[in-house]
Length: 293
Image (cartoon, rainbow, N blue to C red; front, side):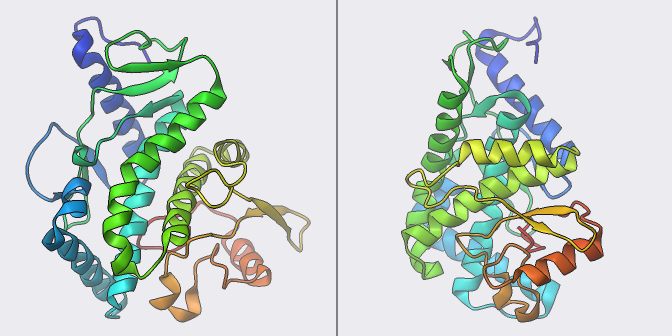
């Protein structure tokens, strides 16, 4: 992506990131985010990690959305897990999406992403730091970290996501009643799910599965498992990709008969039935309302 000549070097990184976020929002119906300068309203991950009242409001807002959508009042641990799932998927898309599309990894500080609790809408403020390959047009600008190899950039994506999520996981873990492996399993699941969803949206499912597998080929600490895609053979001979989540998104606790398609509780026969009945159409694999990721 070329950098506008009228943009100062200090602002060029933020402009490049903002353009990338807007592209993602336009492509992904499940990504409820807008791009704006730093502002007020809502809560940030920084506040969720340090302010008990903000964290309680975060969980209560998700409980209210679940009740409105499904007529069920979830347990606090279920509401907290669902809220975390939505947040992790959104951050996974905001970091993994630019990497997939442009080989750029944004530096997203916890204070750069705000969530409006009433609407569930996120606001991202583009920062001044990103990582990219050495031949990227923005390489050499202030705040840009460059790498000569793809593998190094993938490692940077894993590290940047972990750094962003770690304080929130420490704060919300006791509310979810989950230990470290399950929490980090959800983060890895939602990064993989975001890449998978983006690829399907673009008609590039196979490429996205390859990309997600390259990011998480195996368990890489703190992520407890790899992407672990596999294929199911349908009655028509088609091979349908699937995977099994490591960290459950808890949708089954809201709709027991409708566990998500990648839930460990959903057997292969049921997965195939859903895939064939849908014609393998693209669904929001990870959107908080669907439980399908």
